[in-house]
Amino acid sequence: MNPPAITSIIPAGYGLEFIPPDENADKTIIVLGAARGGTSMVAGLVRLLGIPMGERIDPPTNEDLDFIEGREPLAAIPDAKHPEHSQVLQRLLQLVNTRNQQHSVWGWKDPLGFVYIAPLLAHLRNPHLVVVFRDFYSISARELTETHTDTLETLSRAQNNYAWLLEVLKRREAPALLTGYEKAILQPEQFANDLCEFLGMEAKPEFLQAAREFIEPGRGHGHLPVDHAS
Image (cartoon, rainbow, N blue to C red; front, side, top):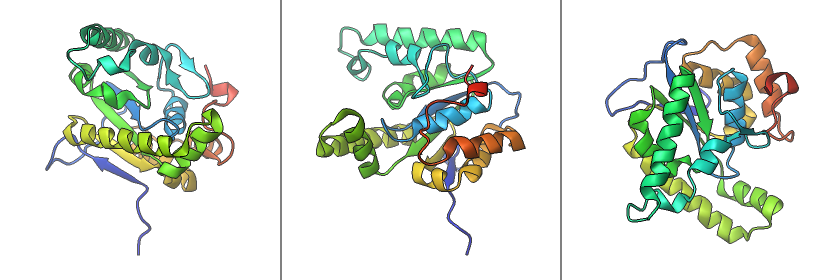
């Protein structure tokens, strides 16, 4: 019996097959998930591939601070009646347009990006979603350690976030690579290979070695090695 896959690729539309993009083709990589859910690790791997993931990156989380700050107030985005709804969306679209002009291949990571990704998809060149899931209790335990947030409150928030994310995935117009954080930790080289295949890139030996070291349990998955951090 073959071991269970650690990733699943969902094509852009029903009934379609996924065709990996050419390595040199324009593309935008968006890392999605939930807070404390493994997105720092996934975004770090994308950065190790040499893909620009932001002008201002928060080292512990690999988050693009321009998108993090630009999508506030977050509550304005899904509420068309909110007084800042149009303003926030316009700010995000301007970020997308600027990055499109700067890079043929780029991306960003925001664990709450599922709140606003839908209206941006039409403006992104060849978007590819990389989505990581983590078990709720591990998310809660990490949140308790970091912020002392009530366990039940964190479990409830994780449940709501993933429910919202799943609805976005059902309605997406872009291919998506799905994985489980726990699976990737156990099989780092396989996940690194799967990520390269999804993005149409060669899984070079030096990248696979860097991925194994980066994903090693217990080291934390935000900060990149010094020679990759620029």
